[in-house]
Length: 411
Image 1 (tube, one colour):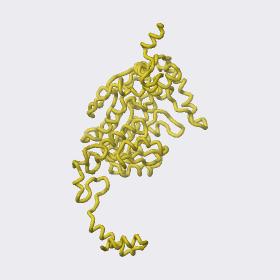
Image 2: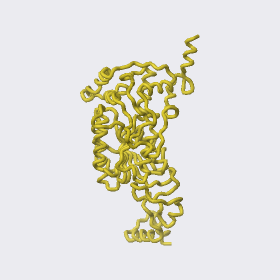
Image 3: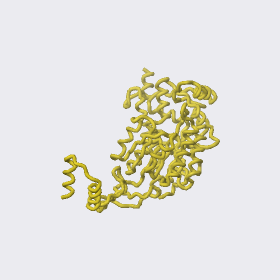
Image 4: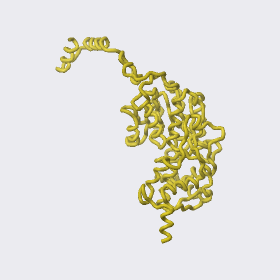
């Protein structure tokens, strides 16, 4: 009766005295069960009734109680801040995390549209975009304040006027590791590097990646997991898409050094699954480095042949010796910080990528691989490269095949 009278008093525009307000608070606390903190999944006396399963928290993922059957509406116990989530690999990592019922914090520095596609990958409130500045320490602390897992996917395969290889691939990783250590509640740190990362690599990007690995392991020697994916293939990739666009626009494809370099391209979905599996284990992946290459070894020329076969075009190549390719790509690097305007993004003639393709890039003989994470990677031929059908001349279901061209030439 007292509560009803107070509500009527408020609806009529009345104001409560401090004594009355304190009485209301006491009345509510006495008549309602205490609520557990958000995300613990079991608040109140009736909390267990709504939980389909109780299980210990994921090791290395904080002290949250898991609930649900493991789908998007479940609670996995993981609250992950995924830096670089709006990039190529990031969308697949976010999808895999959301699929198992994790909450994903998505730091972004671009427009409000850059994370729009990620919101649909999880249940309501599961994907949380947060604006941040990668050069502002307080901004970084804010986006990882509630998380217990940090995944660093930040990387850049070319330099710009504002961000160089050393800052993006090394210093940012070092800074994230230091802030995560200060945080105190980060139980797992996943650093995504690149296959072939080494201080002696001809690629400046891979040298910076190696320095980033070293800095992360210095801060988290027993907690961090290093993942080194090979050249990733997928719908938004930066190799087959660029080759196909160049071949359609110019009628040929330049091959550096006859395309004889051996690489081990990997399907991007497999890499994302490996990252998530490393979080779901019992901690065996902590402090280890994994090299993730595909099940098949290709030369650059063979990979280009696969691209041409999928888009149904005659293969046409121009072989470029390594010095010639470097000479074509060098002007952008020399003028990058000397002109008052931004230069175009390099595609085929990316100097650092040309240097990286000057050596074979394969998984080491004794390295930990997909099999150690319980994953069998896909072969590229088939579904992983099906996205290239959009480049067929007559549409995805049509195009010209070799047999059709032979028949037409004989007529």
